[in-house]
Image (tube, rainbow, N blue to C red; front, side, top):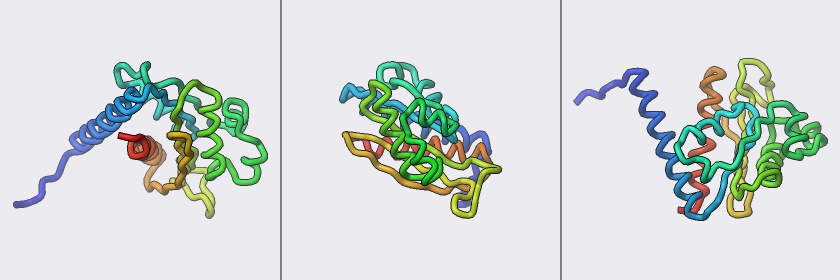
Length: 175
């Protein structure tokens, strides 16, 4: 039997269904523990918060989102030490972790996720090329972090960041 190929709109529909399924599971896990989620976003500019609030009933589990695109916003809104940004750069593990911790400190949430990256097409360096994204999640009093590299244009990098952040959050939340 020959493999079938899906149209671009069919692939997009599958991606939306997978994202909705992850968000539904995240919401159920947060609701079961009466926990709230806060997001701290740089390169995604609020896309993660928007995806969360697209789900009906999200006010029961989504507390707030911080869009901290500039270094100043990271410091002012989340309490990320400017020296940390100067020493490691905005796209770094220490800054992502500080963003996730700051989202909890500056909200009423018990769970947070943070993203900071280089979406492109400009801004990349040899050490941090376009597509480099640092993630951090605070779940159950523990902060987890990791880096991913995504290929593609700006929209693709940002969308991949959104999908990965939520998929990994789901894996960290107790079932």
